[in-house]
Image 1 (tube, rainbow, N blue to C red):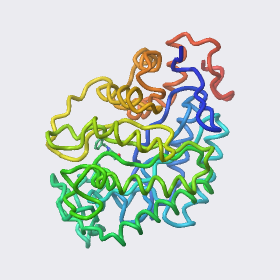
Image 2 (cartoon, rainbow, N blue to C red):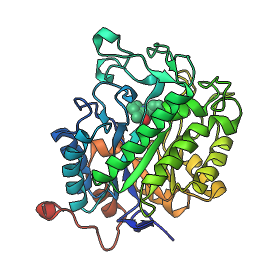
Image 3 (cartoon, protein in one colour):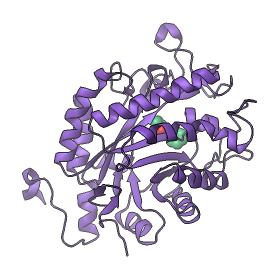
Length: 356
Ligand code: 531
């Protein structure tokens, strides 16, 4: 039976355990460039014992940034500082991963600590883009420019170029962001996609943007390296994207060469009633894993070592991604191993050994 500290082989990669650092926006870049903050933030969590360390939503185009402080990988200039970070993450025994993203209609906002609302052009904002000219609302009120078919192809080629650069940067694990009300999810959800062309309407059309993007990325991302997709498994609203559609999409993505689905939820509708609680998204990971026959990661309010271990032992997910709990304690994996009486205990960095 698998457990939280069993190694996880996927393609040519083997994670030392089932714990992933969930991608977390730092909003701390200038022009999308990684800096000392990212080295320390990601490096600390690699030293803390996680199996895979997934760098924050990294924009494939400048207009795809949630805020002007987002990480980016839209030019070759972005690669060099990432190489240094990924070398360090690997040296700590973790696998460096990245989440490639385009924020769609939610792009061009202030950092959360500045309120998170859309910025006017003269305050550093820009007109966002989306599948349809419908604003998200709730402070993200700018009406997106509706992408033409040619512009869609351009965004897809941005994802491909970003995937090539990710490889050059030393990433070994790629996640495409298809969740949280950002561009790919905006195409998936009938609540944000009102198109009448081949990218809107029926399920086959709403999934087209993500499926085509995945196919194009898979063609340049090495076959032997994991390609994963984060999905919002439910919009949590009547008439929105749902778990049944997620399972069907996961089956299709598997055929396209996706190795794992990272199962999140929400983000399409500000007023959605989400039953937030410990592990509230785990049932999505379980269902996708069972019904689509693909590896999954569970994420969302996972804080307790026993809880995380049980998720893996029960076969609800292959991996457990932690976010805020790892902000509180970068050494959570090492502490969890002790709490779970894992034998042999994973070794802390030699420099820290006398503290453990
Ligand atoms: C929070 C969020 C979770 C679930 C649905 C919507 C929003 N996160 C999402 C992050 C950015 C910061 C806020 C990303 O997915 C990039």
